[in-house]
Structure formats: C-alpha cells, structure tokens
Length: 356
Ligand code: NAD
Ligand code: IPM
Ligand code: MN
Image (spheres, rainbow, N blue to C red):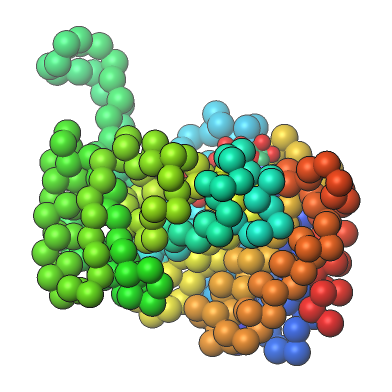
C-alpha cells in the first residue's frame, strides 16, 4: 500500500508529521513517499503541482495532504498560486466526493461556540461535490462589459454549471452514505434563484426514487446556514455543491469545537482518495508549534478506512484521539479552563501513546 505524503505550506508540514508519526505507530506497514506541493513546490520547482508530484499522487493508493497557501502568493498569476495544487489534484484524480464529518466529541462540548445542549452528541456528515460548480466552470475571466448596467466597464465573471451525471453520482454517494447512518439527506441548493441549482434539485429528486428508505429534504443554502447554528442535530447527511459545501463545512467545524477537528476524505469512483484536514495552511500560526493536528490525524484514520481497507486500524486511531481528549490535553484552539494546553507535537505524541 502506497501513500503519497504532500505536506504543503504553513502548518501543513507540522500537522502532517504528526499524522505520519501516528501511522508509523500502527502495526500495519505502508510505503510512504513525500513530495512538495503548493507554495513549497512553487519555490522548489516553479509550479504548485509539479509533474513529479502529480505522478506520485496518481500512482498511490491514497494521498495524505496537509494544506497549501500563503498570503505572499496572492499576487501571482492564478495558475501559479498554491491553491491550484489542491484544485488540480482533485480534478486530475477525479475526486468528486468530499466527505466532511462534523462530530462533536463529548470532551469538546464546552469548546464549541454554541450552547452545550445544541452540540452534545452531534454527528453530521457534509458531502460536498468537489470537481464541478463555479469552481471549475468555464468560461471565466476578465473583460470589458458589452452589456449590463455598466457597458464598457472592466468586469470579471465565473460560470456556475453542473452536468446531470455529476449531480447523479454525488446524490447516489449521499443516499448510500445516509443508508448506513440516520437515513436522512438534506440537499442544499439555491433553486429559488439559480438555474444550476433548480437542476440540482430536480436531479437529486429523481435519484431519490431509487432510495425510498432514505428521507430527502431540500433546503435553501441561506436557511441551511442558519439551521446549522440553530439546530444542527436535526441534520444527518447534507449533500451540496462545491461552493456551498466549502462554506457550510467551515461553519459546521465550529460545532465540533474547532476547524482543527474537522477531517476530510475526497474520493473518486475507484476509491482512491485524498485525505486532508478541512482547514487551510493557517499562516497566522504557522511555525509556532501550536496547530491542532487532530483533523489531519483523523483524516489519516479516514484514509485507512476508505482507501486502505484497514477499518480496525482506523478505529484504533479514532479511539486514541478520544482518549487524549479525555486526558484533558488541548491545543490552544480547543483549550478551555481546567484542561492542559499542549503543542502540535505533544498532541501527536499523546495520540501515539494512547494507541499503545
Ligand atoms: P485557514 O483554515 O488556514 O485558517 C482560518 C483560521 O483557523 C485561522 O485563524 C487559523 O489559525 C485557524 N486554524 C486553521 N487550522 C487550524 C488548526 N489545525 N489548529 C488551530 N487553528 C487552526 O483559512 P484562511 O486563513 O482563510 O486561509 C489561509 C490559507 O490557506 C489561504 O492561502 C487559503 O487559500 C488556504 N487554504 C487551503 C486549504 C487547503 O489546502 N485545502 C483549505 C483552506 C484554505
Ligand atoms: C478547502 C479550501 C479550498 C477550497 C481552497 C484552498 C481551494 O478552502 O479545501 O476547503 O475552496 O476547496
Ligand atoms: Mn474551505
């Protein structure tokens, strides 16, 4: 089993080393090979996703990814920006199904910004379509407006689009996932305004005919954003497009205590997967040894379960994470009165010890 390890920028290398440490402490053996990606790869090879990195990823059973991006690259032409590396990997590998589970561990109920009773026992799954929508739609660019309110003015445009097969396959992923848990899917759209999302809603409704045992609810994205903080436990599986899923998953992360707790799995139709925390490179805390590595460690557990056929090892990691939380160890993002503040490496070490 081969894992491509792509640490990236900012806190990426710090959190990925902890996940690698945890994987190394299991009695399962993997071949791991690292490569630069993002800003680090731009510095080393002049491109955020060098050919060699892409080849390594394509040939691996799974990819463990940290994060990419730094403010200092914000003025580069778009094709060379670090973020193009993660977008390019998703597209090149066809990783259309992004699983972002938001689970509020019992020990972290007090770390959430919401009242304890709203988040205690929370276990929802956001399924975000990852290779379509306004993220990838063409055409896009800048031009001189030919019409509209300001003809002759400089303007910028992107294209929101979804093809029927793209919606069908992500809807199936969501219904199948819901079947194995709470049997309820909330499809989040903006059908009241956008043709793309009226189509989304129609197609999801059609696919639902094959899943009569699963309840389907439709919700507009603005309401969904509100319901997520009003009564998050009313959700089971949320399925939505690329952009809405990006935004709602960051929102949902705060229900779990911190974005440093939210793992993710991005899968293609061959169960090859890229595993990364849902957060970014956190340049504001990079290099300080304080980033929470648990989202990345939990992403490694998802990797064992979804791509490497090691569900038992995945369960051991998840149990070890709960154990260190029960011991009261907290990185600053989840710290609260009466718990012990630790750094990134100490947290990783504690998970390794808890595995033993
Ligand atoms: P971010 O997720 O990096 O950070 C948002 C806030 O959350 C910051 O205050 C940060 O310190 C905190 N945070 C994030 N992860 C944390 C962790 N593990 N432990 C403790 N605190 C944590 O989002 P941003 O600041 O908007 O973006 C920073 C850069 O990351 C940008 O260049 C952006 O494009 C990029 N980004 C990359 C990915 C990815 O690689 N998949 C995802 C999101 C953002
Ligand atoms: C994420 C990130 C990425 C996205 C960026 C860095 C391209 O925010 O993985 O959530 O928008 O998908
Ligand atoms: Mn995001």
